[in-house]
Image 1 (cartoon, rainbow, N blue to C red):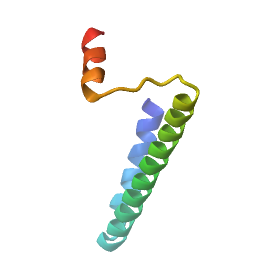
Image 2 (image 1 turned 90 degrees about the vertical axis):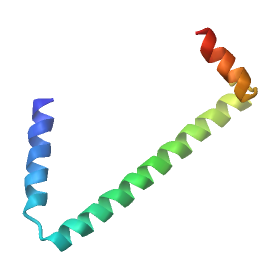
Image 3 (image 1 turned 180 degrees about the vertical axis):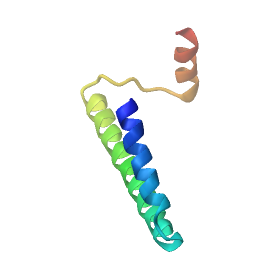
Length: 73
């Protein structure tokens, strides 16, 4: 964890040395990449869910059914 923190500190130091305009460009790029990674994760999860559903491994039901299952755990 400490090595990761020092790596992050170095990155933050580099960002601090950027001009405001370059920092804003970087922030926009990072934000867009983060959004894309989240979309890819959602797609991956949905494909896994559909595979499980097709194999009969996923349960179906209403929100009320789900709440009952969650409350019984």
